[in-house]
Image (cartoon, rainbow, N blue to C red; front, top):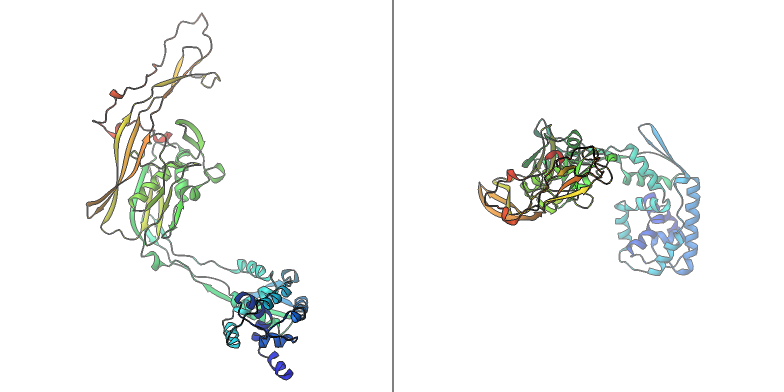
Length: 497
């Protein structure tokens, strides 16, 4: 029997390496080995006999001693293209939980038929080499991963881009990196043959996940939408363009959900945004990122016309000039534009800008004879709330007003609007569906007039008011019978958020 055991100990290094370091771990993971009592380590491992509690300590000590000896004497040097990567003892802390694993095996005491056949198949798949090295030297995987990051070249996916206004599909390029399966196999084999391991790092090709052929299925212009920025300030144009640039080339897979804020934010100076006018609580004020809402609104309308699913959208406090009522998409710290690609193929978002306009194109599968259009419908006009007069107690407007009775208009009162927006689907030019996608109300606003607070010297002549404050508008003065959306007093683009 002893001679038979010696023969089995000299089975090729692959089986010895796998059985010594792997089988024990596999017994726990797979839960299928049933070992018989023995104090002979090779007999236990190779013949897979039952391990009883009385032999757990013996076997554990034997494996631990051999592992520690090997670990203290092994010298590993990996080489790639003339550069050497030593792996030191610090990189290979020997595992100390062998006893726990053996005890677990003993406690489980599972059985399996055709054990030798199963083990042979397990070894043949070469899974054992990776598990063995990982288990014996837990830190070595991190070291090899660090080497791989230095060596590897990431594959380049094919992309859909825009060049001089034309849609172009780029070629994909394969990358390469460490073939860890082959490396672990070589290391395991060498580990049991010699204390010094000098190996050339095996390399494998890494194929791109998106090919030119893939993109040829979804390279059609589904929609194009533009908004005007010609009368915007320089900072505002910068913010609109910057936000859209962060979206340029974005590929969205089927079922994937995208948040505008996550893709373009945070809208801070640190992230490249500049100060421009924003609307806060119905008032104009300076704020970093002013104009970003025009970027989100332009994207929103392009998504609608491409037939994409809108999950979250919010209107502005006031109507904005660059889109029809109820078709704006305000974003802020608490509001976002969120959409999902509900199509069968990926889409790509392409953006561009000039001094006059910003544009979003949605590229995807061919819509064939289907198109989408949006329509804004006024339900009613809400009377404005007249003016409120505020005293310039803090002297914020001394350049405008100073004495009592002197007034300056900061803003005009604005009518409110109740509006519905529709998305209409056309097939070969005939409308086949019409869905009300939004029903919103822009609340009426008060105007603001500021007045001075200082006493007027008696020597000054009485002054004539420069402002005639407006009273709240009456309902009977408001009509939608003759309604022209172009005459709505919207927020000028230069002041839009």
